Amino acid sequence: MRKFLLLPLFFSLVFLTACKKDVPDNGNTNPPVPTLTDNDHILLGNPTNAQTSATYSTNYFKDYGYYKISYNSVMGTPNWVAWHLQSEDLGSAPRQDDFRSDNTLPSAWYRVTSTSYSGSGFDRGHNCPSADRTSTIAANSSTFYMTNMIPQAPTLNQGPWAGLEDHIRANMVGNSNEAWIYMGNYGNAGGVGSNGHFTVIDNGKVRVPSKVWKLVVVIPKGNSDISRMDRNATVLCVSMPNDNSLYTAGNKTAWRNYIISVSALEIESTANGTALSLFSNIPEVERTVLKSKIYQ
Image (cartoon, rainbow, N blue to C red; front, side, top):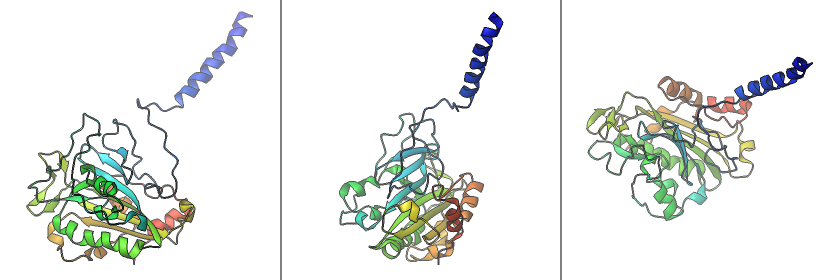
């Protein structure tokens, strides 16, 4: 009789062992993903599934309050930055120009400083623009963390990129609309600044990206945002070479020559080493349409 009494215990152990194997163990415990609400900067999705753990050193998620980022500590730049924009974010706060390191990053990581780009021939190019955060001094100051910067060709930064930022604020958002904006970069072939071609700066600590992209989705102001994110939303997507020889600071509209679909951006970025999955929080039937749109 004893051997039959042991059978239930045996099968119980097998069951518990099998259940345990179903739980992934990557040696890291991440905080649960918070519930997203209207106006959340990443309401449309987390393009690289960035996580708030130091073990994710090339895809580290951080919430700065006024924007959210995926930071790559190996490259010394963000993979992407996301922010929500509406007229309430715009005011009269002056530009702070207080470029600085983020000293709250994991202590083992190199911290890019305000002078890391000095003499490189590249601008400290904002991802979330200073001019998109002028409601308060604190909001504007937040955009000057070096984790919000990339080495950007000066003529690109000061010319068509500045023009694109102005176009989004004035013509796409205005007083009656709201926008979700993502900016990122990819490519290891380097860029061309005012001093020529470089793949890295700051003694190899900061990578110079080959391409810079921006994605904007605009809908009228309202509530229940994700449920209103349908095929009628306006979508603008550009991907531009980080090359000083291709632009002039005076030509603010050259971004129109680099408009692509979101699907094309995903393919190109992934092929160059940065896999993106955009609009992951939008229902698939609408997501497919939005990804195929070309801005006119």
